[in-house]
Amino acid sequence: MLKKSGTTVALVGVPKMFDHSVKVEWNNQSVPWWNECCAMVLEVFGLPGNRFMYHPHEDYMVFKFKTEKDADLCRILLSERL
View 1: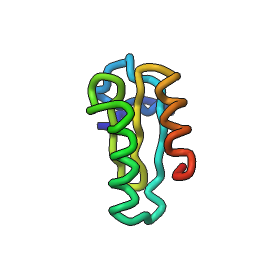
View 2 (view 1 turned 135 degrees about the horizontal axis):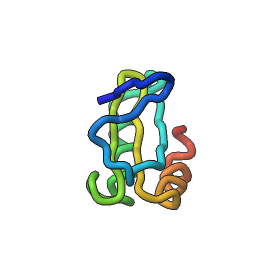
View 3 (view 1 turned 90 degrees about the vertical axis):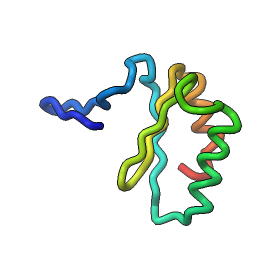
């Protein structure tokens, strides 16, 4: 859930330790395209909760990682899709 305070938008219910984000835009992609993106992330980082969390939105999805290293690895993994 998003909570807006002034000009700052925070994800409510997300632990502070998940503060390295990777944003993937939908860009009118097909369902198989998006399934492949999620499968790639799950194969490398495992299930959400340990190393990352995700938050789907109408136009994009945000993957939030505990470490900058994992966020950078995800950017490389999905580089052709970002």
